[in-house]
Length: 305
Picture 1 (cartoon, one colour):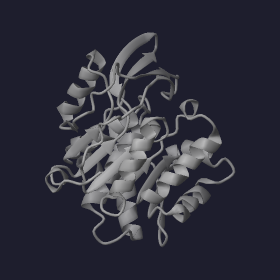
Picture 2 (cartoon, rainbow, N blue to C red):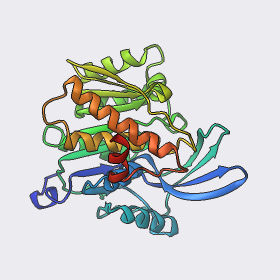
Picture 3 (cartoon, one colour):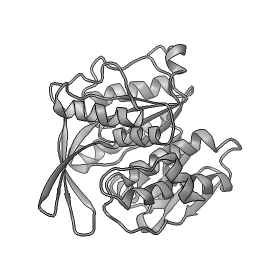
């Protein structure tokens, strides 16, 4: 992938990964909403005022059009080649009484020739797209092309039912981490990838693999952010929970926003604290309302104030 300076200047962030339609079953009612972890991150970044391009694989169908309109409504640019599939993938989410969601997927992931020559300030990759063949190989190639020139962030957002064997998924994850600067995962992701490690041991291991910053979200216990020289525990923001859909993606979007706007003096404990507080607050806003509905910049700033 040969970067184009003109294309590079167009975006603060490029997100690469899956977009799909969430079919939500809740209290006997079925509703459909655009989703997919990387798509949610792109949407959240655009709402925070970041110039955001999104490289994905959706169909030229009604579901694909719904996704495109949803993203455009926040200001996300769908990159050329992204409407490459015969049909758009879906994820069926069933909500429990506590607002947590269980998922079943009908997903095909193949970037094909969609990879474009962009070199943004920051590249984010995530979730199923980094594991699922054949598109996962193209995601890795994009990370390889941007490593060392763009800041690279990664959220594995584990969906175990789609990842084949644990050994294979862990191998893919550990091949990607050295290509990244920042890795974020949930405590559930950490427990699945490294069942015999504590969250603290997991993030230390991720740093040893080559990441500069590792963050793990701990639900009601907040989040943990570590670098080689600093570590902070950021408490959770108390919130009434409508559901948890998109909470981790809002955390990721706000973390990226902070990386691009606040971490100018290195990742000192005070900078990590600021990054974690911003990301945790964004997640807390999101869980107060149904669906993956991340905050605007004004909402986030008001809550932080």
